[in-house]
Image 1 (cartoon, rainbow over the protein chains, first blue to last red):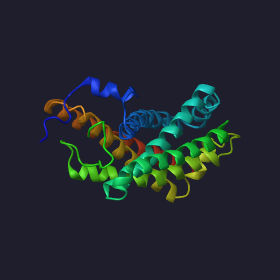
Image 2 (cartoon, helix red, strand yellow; image 1 turned 45 degrees about the vertical axis):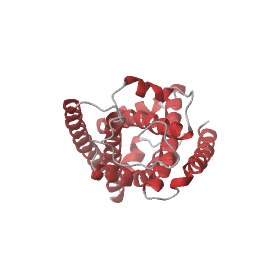
Image 3 (spheres, one colour; image 1 turned 90 degrees about the vertical axis):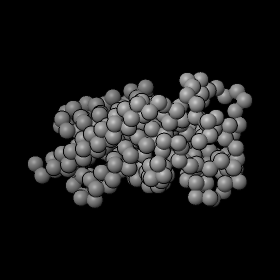
Image 4 (cartoon, helix red, strand yellow; image 1 turned 180 degrees about the vertical axis):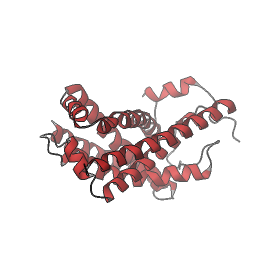
Length: 128
Length: 132
């Protein structure tokens, strides 16, 4: 096993948040992981909150009133943004995992991110 | 995976990640995108609230079509599996010790099984409300 890889380091995790000196591949790497962590937290929160459905219409519809809160709407927007960035970046990873576009990863990344930005813009306009 | 990813880097199982886990993560990704689009569209755009969200009555009505609980359960299993294998992969990037990794394996396995059982119970509970 290559001993230089995957050495334990908290600094390695913190470096995801530091944009200085990062190559495009590093941005794609950080974007994939940060959105993954955010979406995983959201997933379990979402599952927990959907439990209100089992409590009947009163509990659920009362919860729905909260969705008009600007902070909750911002959170919902952030989830969709994270899904688009993670999903489209993920398609690039899947393609290259099966040998498609391996030498064109930079172009694939920028292409998918442009699509993501367009979809984010569309969703933002629709939402607000 | 190095953070200074070169342009020729391709995703592959990490040390500590079996090929099967890696393959499941890679295959569930595109599947999730398809099911997520359906889930988002239905739950956020065609409900009777002005915002497009579904009320309780909308959700119960929607779940009376038997294909819907099936799709939601498929979505649940796929998303829980993908997220927990992915999160484990992120932790592997930090090269945890063997005991820590064993604890993480147990914790994620239990969390995954519990989440899927809870989610299936919730889906079936909602679907059963329609007959009342």
